[in-house]
Length: 437
Ligand SMILES: *[C@@H]1O[C@H](CO)[C@@H](O)[C@H](O)[C@H]1NC(C)=O
Ligand SMILES: *[C@@H]1O[C@H](CO)[C@@H](O)[C@H](O)[C@H]1NC(C)=O
Ligand SMILES: *[C@@H]1O[C@H](CO)[C@@H](O)[C@H](O)[C@H]1NC(C)=O
Ligand SMILES: *[C@@H]1O[C@H](CO)[C@@H](O)[C@H](O)[C@H]1NC(C)=O
Ligand SMILES: *[C@@H]1O[C@H](CO)[C@@H](O)[C@H](O)[C@H]1NC(C)=O
Image 1 (cartoon, rainbow, N blue to C red):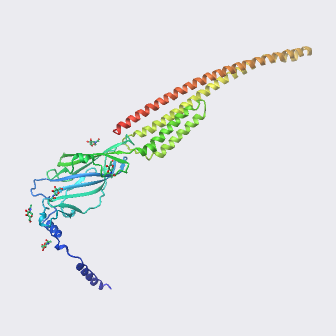
Image 2 (tube, rainbow, N blue to C red):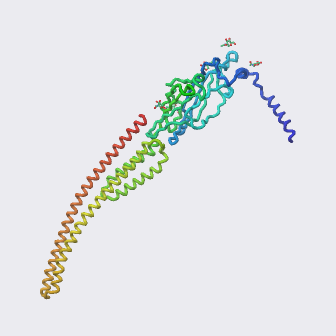
Image 3 (cartoon, helix red, strand yellow):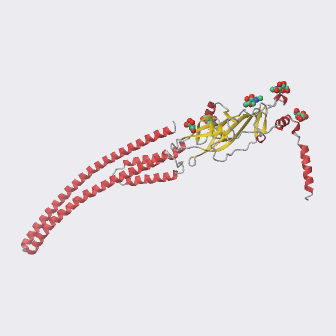
């Protein structure tokens, strides 16, 4: 079998070679080979070496994939365009059948070494092998790039935050004398172009400002172009899932002030609200971005909400405590007094009665018994009277105390309301300021 294989292969390639027409005769082939025959991709394509090659850049932000606050990384997909002139790759189109533009493999020609300064991860982009070139030697290269770039991300104003991230393009090696940079489009056009931006993400693009400057460092002067991409988060999802439940719980807690202050169910109710809030916080902790360096306003919002709930609960506990202590002191006193009265009278009566029972004659005994009973009844009546009077006093005290309690509760409610209002206004102002409305 094995000696036969080469023969089969040879015959097969022979058939194939015969079937496919050779491109040798075509104009395109002639043009391409003519262009690349004398070409050396190692040489920067200028006739006069003192002249810089100007590379014109353009950037279109297509999608924001991920904003990683914890690691201060931004993942985006951008369309990157670069255009430069190659003086060795031009032709007279009337000599080549009016061919105005052709594509050439990128690997066969000189290309600038421009990178994004901020990139922190391997840029993933489809490997596009061709560039477009027109008859005056202008080369256009464009490709989508998935950029993971470092960006100083702020969480203060989350979920109303606006992030400003920059993409700085420069040649990694060539100084401004060799490679200069320029903007392909007008700055204003770059700034307000949102056409390419994919709208269905969490982020909305506000502006892309661009800036050209020359960086002076020890190894030379480098041209660079910086694009500042300003994006804003669409806060609706977070408002619905984080802020509104929080506000509802606070309102429910406010509503619990309508329960009478001496009602112990109020404490149970408020405790339940607090527990509910804690569970809510634990559930939602993944939604809130955390960065080590800065505090987010929403974190403070949650903490202050919790503090307010605790405050309102402790107010209620304090009220009940006052009520109980006053009740016990108000009730024990008349009881003690009553006991004291009974004991005093009893100790005074009993010895007399005992004495009478022991020493008096039976005739007198009856009289003594009678008079003793009357006295006892009188004392009993007096003590009942006393008791009723003190009870009335206690009741009056209690009513007065309850009125005071209600007023105190109202005061606490108003102060709580004031604190809550002040807090809401402050928060709204801060959010508005930081989100740049
Ligand atoms: C291409 O060039 C070859 C010689 O190099 C020539 O014979 C041929 O006619 C040319 N083809 C066209 C279409 O000009
Ligand atoms: C291009 O070629 C045509 C004829 O082949 C000639 O007339 C014309 O001058 C050439 N143009 C340039 C810019 O060389
Ligand atoms: C080649 O492209 C550049 C830039 O788009 C343009 O200025 C130039 O006129 C084009 N050349 C021809 C022959 O179309
Ligand atoms: C974004 O940041 C750059 C500097 O890093 C600054 O020049 C630019 O004005 C900022 N843009 C906005 C809208 O804040
Ligand atoms: C995104 O929205 C803007 C206007 O808000 C619109 O001009 C643009 O065409 C939209 N882009 C896409 C890709 O839908």
